[in-house]
Length: 152
Image (cartoon, rainbow, N blue to C red):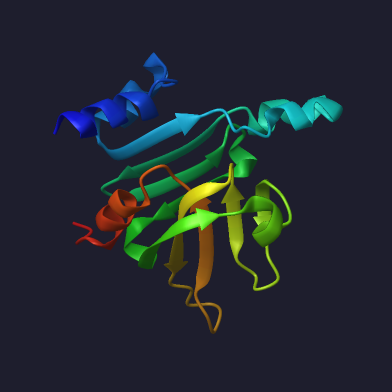
């Protein structure tokens, strides 16, 4: 509906022409500047790494993270065993800060801001338990609906 179009326009406001081919096959896209950027003024060499945070879902992949490739993750959707919406992620109290984080349970967090997000489990044949990723997104219910749907 109209609300969905307005939200999509809001979420994609930072998209450049270079991302146009990605958006053509995108099932979900959002990109924004993380609110913790001013804190990085004390370590300016990290600004390019965290300049933009984005979440992209296509038929094949989930891509999330920050501007620099080393701070991004691309996951094959067929390996996602579950996706669960999270009503509120608190970066400071739950993750010890914002950015790329690992908690005591071994979960990997892409924590851009306090707010809603998604927890996904990835099938991991090499380990005896699934890998878990937690990330912020503005519409976790929609992202989970897409990720939990039939992959093909």
